[in-house]
Image (cartoon, rainbow, N blue to C red; front, side, top):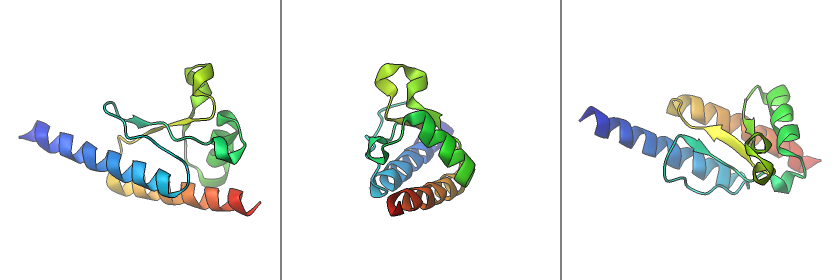
Length: 105
């Protein structure tokens, strides 16, 4: 029972964060496993490292540049959803603020 409860909890977290990134205009495919998503940040015109550094500085949200996973990862960021719903929602809200600032430039 506890395994099924945890599986459902992570499913809810995954679905929440994928939806929020897609709504922000950062296309994100729904992963089949693990605890990570890879939003596409190419529309920002920033490298994955630039994006992660700027997000950390501006909103205090840490992500991993996709470039850390090889050349094919450039243009994406890796985001863990192994956090509480509250923490994920707060981080997504901060990322939305960051994206809104970028879109105003």
